[in-house]
Image (cartoon, rainbow, N blue to C red):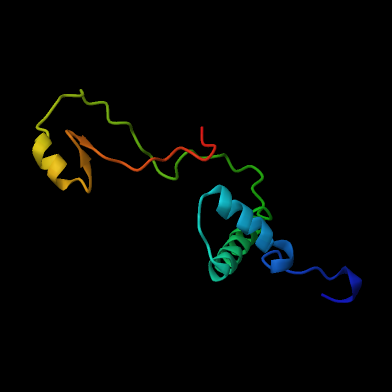
Length: 113
């Protein structure tokens, strides 16, 4: 790398997401990250994007796409009901219940669909 044609490595912060980008993605993902968390996420995302850029340089001419790297056959056995967990045992294992139901936190709101 010499002269004015020198470009930073693909996984450098100059080519990665800005802290503003990371903060926006964190907000959209409903992640509460402090400054250290944002910096760590920025470093992680920069490394991931650098790896993707490295993968994009590979010569894959003539390589057939694979759904899976190994042979896998769907299990086509009949779907037969079997023993199930007693409702009371299941409710006793749940962290929170409302009557005969497992209570879960609200996941929609604040503009969620």
